[in-house]
Length: 88
Image (cartoon, rainbow, N blue to C red; front, side):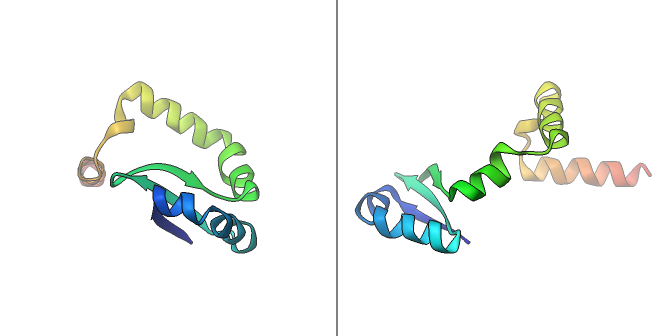
């Protein structure tokens, strides 16, 4: 489960947060001044989901960057999908 918390709470409750991460595999999204700035997650979660990304996902990300589609808004993505489906 991912929970959003402020940087102040992260600082004052770091020990408890780390215990939850280790024991329950919880994830924490740290926000500063209302903007998400960092994530705390377990080492196991990090290794499984971040470090060992499938090569196909990495390749898709590289292709999206080259095509300039890595910065599309959700509405733009929905429009692209709709256009593609209409063309079938």
